[in-house]
Image 1 (cartoon, helix red, strand yellow):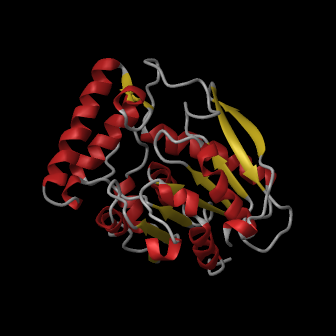
Image 2: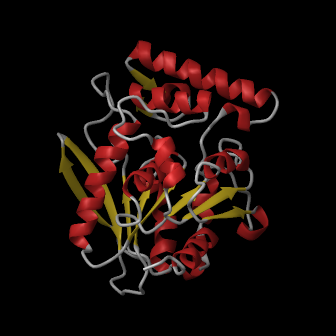
Length: 293
């Protein structure tokens, strides 16, 4: 769907209270039902849900009911990140994702649910699906979401990724949180989130402290269908990082798709694709139409 034909859906703002936190949700729903699953979409690190407004309009125009959730401490989710914030990936996956899917299940009791996400949001979606299986999640759509293993980057870029991620973990530990708003990367993040992110960059695995699940084992056993989209010009999450993540999915049907600048009609990178997301939304629909059930 071209931007000129963009279906305008007024987003509904909703809030979910749980465990002393408030998660902000934005719901895009045309009200018609085309047999597609509800798509729950999670943002990239430090990116508010409202950044995906145009992309969510395209998804709604394709027929999806869409729920995009602000990550804990960001956007409309409160309280904001501070030195008191001690959560990491295990909490975002095991508590926040679960709470949002419970909310979606109450609102859409008779519809399947698929997860989607950009960058960190995609990783969290995949880990949740791996832990809960196809009974809970019909499929996972990843956009520019790969494990940032330093060996997946070329030349001096690999050294730079390793050095930066490990230094970020040290800074977050000493400062009490990651001051990305001052340092120009990732926004303000809880030190546990940066710790887990740095560990994935160093090891290429999801060995997450405090997690109730062995995510590496769960990913290997997962059978939930996955669409993995890489984006031209993306130096933060190049195709090799996505391939590395997909290689963990030895039992799941995985479909890889590369979004090119030629198809977009404009320059792309890790963030710019969101503003030219119509072809991505259409590709997700084509994939979702083939999901079982």
